[in-house]
Length: 78
Image (cartoon, rainbow, N blue to C red; front, side, top):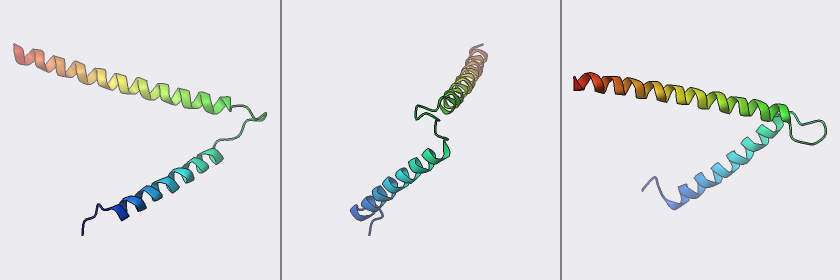
């Protein structure tokens, strides 16, 4: 009997749907609601800052890796 079959695929899909709904519900409870029912500007700003910091760190690491590879290839060509 194969592990990947229709029954297990359906069970996995259903479990994933329930987990996504539960995670979304938990995330909505974790973020404090805005006072007037509008968007929570503090939470949006925090998420934006985190995204910006993550992208800066990613690009710095990628650039450093590229510089190391180009320096190594220049040494090999000499």
